[in-house]
Amino acid sequence: MTMTLARLDLDPFDEAFLADPYAHHGAIRDAGRVVWLDSIGAYGMAHYEDVRRALRDHETYCSARGVGLADFAKEEPFRPRSLLLEVDPPLHNRTRSMMNGIVSLKALKQFRPLWKEKAESLIDELVGRRRFDAVSDLGEVFPMMVFPDTIGLMDEGRELLLDYAAIVFNAFGPRNAVFEECNRGKEGAIDWVAQACKREYLKPGGWGMQVYEAADRGVCSHDEAERLVRSFLSAGVDTTVNGISHLVLALAEHPDEYAKLRANPRLAVKAFEESLRWDSTVQTFFRTTTREVEVAGTVIPEGAKVLLFLAAANRDPARWENPERFDLDRNASGHVGFGFGIHQCLGQMVARLEGELIATALAERAAAIRLAGPPLRRLNNTLHAIESLPVEVTPA
Ligand code: OVM
Image (cartoon, rainbow, N blue to C red):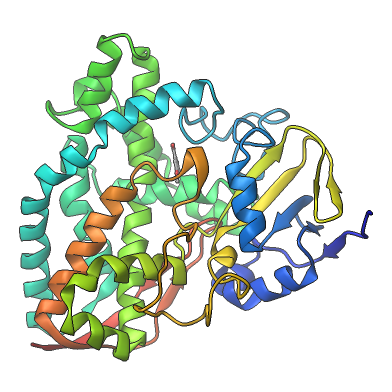
């Protein structure tokens, strides 16, 4: 049985959509299991089961043709392809297992005491001020206190990491005004990252140098090592910056849930996980079909771009009860905010540790937290990002 394919003329990269994607996900899900998005010439899926199935089936839904709108089989990639994100097995197996050896539980265990101290002193200071901006004073600050040192980056120019990440995540979408404006005058960030990834600029002992040491052992080439260090810098900053900002947004907008966290700070891990389900920093990724595939009666041809709405899957009412509610009693595991399958987030343990430490430190120090003004969005073609989030806290 073949069904007529639902054609949607909504543009998932226009400014109204990017400003409030959740207002539009229902229309996509309701239109069908698979939709054709005329605005970008790609298919889309927004149901939890379909998104998960596509992510798991990396043979049919490949990454090597790019995980953005551009098809690398037809267009030059925006930058030399990522050796993790934009490759398929068998190359992916080699680079991923090498990187798994560096981003390990053992390594993180060793960082925990220092990161905890840093989270506590930052939150002490912010709670003392009573009013602060959860983006510019916290979300953008804490990851920068821990992550660049973990990589062993050179000190000068680190602030350019945020500009760079915004460019990379915008580049997965179309060449719209959001992309163009973000890139304007930012050549410096791209040049800085290119330099910071080179061996001679990395400090000994960090994850960056460890990638080169793996290359010394013959696991990959030194050119590949340089590009793998770039993955750390691309994926490790803006994601956690916005993840922490959304965590605070979730807590400020749900005082009952914050009270639960206060009563039991061990819920910090759950709070961060549920905040990722509730508002997923990485909203979408594309895949490209390697063969004709049928989904719920719709035939998708080979070589098609398919936009997977991770954030919509994370609020699919068929999978989640009261999906719009940030709820600490919910089991959020199974959310696809970190993706799913072989490409599932390499840095998820880093993100979780950062989120847990901030949530714990807040719960121990602030009796209440509330919005002190409307949150301001920062538009990005892939990330749900916040520009400003004024909050007020009552010291415990
Ligand atoms: C990479 C990369 C870049 C952006 C995101 C990402 C979410 C990875 O260069 O490997 O994963």
